Image (cartoon, rainbow, N blue to C red; front, side, top):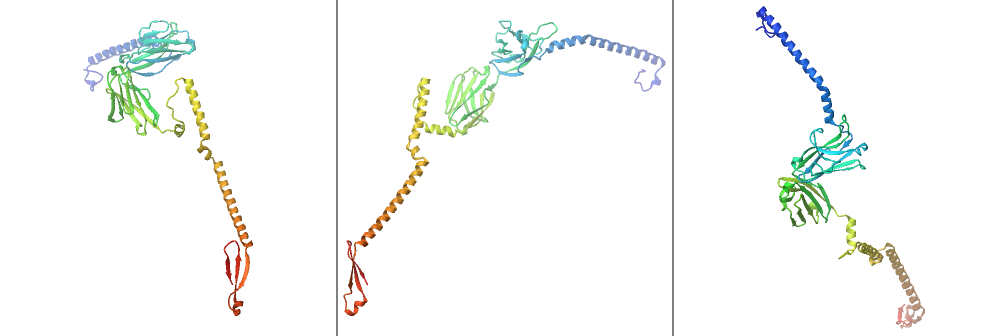
Length: 388
């Protein structure tokens, strides 16, 4: 056959060439007609597509809300929807669906009875916000929702903003990190979905399954300083008392195959609190009446301060008293020493003044009288002899 791809065009007869020319012209004409019809169709749909995109998009500029929410199965969620002041008197609504134009309206502010009994909607024009609450959420409720404000008018779309809600059947924790003082206590609250209400709950050291403490559903268990409590309605509470530094670290809240991590931090007891606990007297009981309690505590504080000021340790511990005592001791020592020295001088003078001096020659021969003699001291004291 003679066609455009034939490598030997000379093999084609004149008839073949004529057929190819006529058939090719008809094919080209058909292609042009098809392209022309498609272009006309696109041109006719352009206004419709523009209008559809306008209706689907909405304004989205005057309504603000959260983007994503994760909720445990069986629990509730509240979504705030903020709007501009000009919409204070307009109707607000809450609808479900991936496309704004075709979403199902579950509740409206101008209708007392919502389409879904689990949904409630309230409007606060003064704060320029309307809130939507959905309760008893199930996994099938996951999806896209819209905060909407009716603007009115045929050619203007309502203002709306979307929020994605994901309903999970796992676990979550109110605070992923809790801290307590040494000797004090901490509380950890773990939340779980409704399908785990009948399952047992565990409290474990992170990475150590052998350390797990388990409690049955809707019961309480005490294991040393740890108290486990499950209300059976979605909350599992762990209380760790008499905290020590060794209690710090990571832990798990576990139910079924679900688990969530919690960090426990233990801080050292402050010096100020140690001083207060040491100085204040122990109280065996406190008054029930708050007024009496405050009066008793105030009286205790005043008495404690007065006792500290009047106590011997407070008085004798004063630097001024210590310095004065030392100075007094020095003065007494100096006076005593001077008195003793003066007394010794007076005694010596008395002894010297009352003595009689007598000279007696040596009782020997006359030739020896020039050689010596005896001097006698006579006083109240025994006689003293001095040989010369």
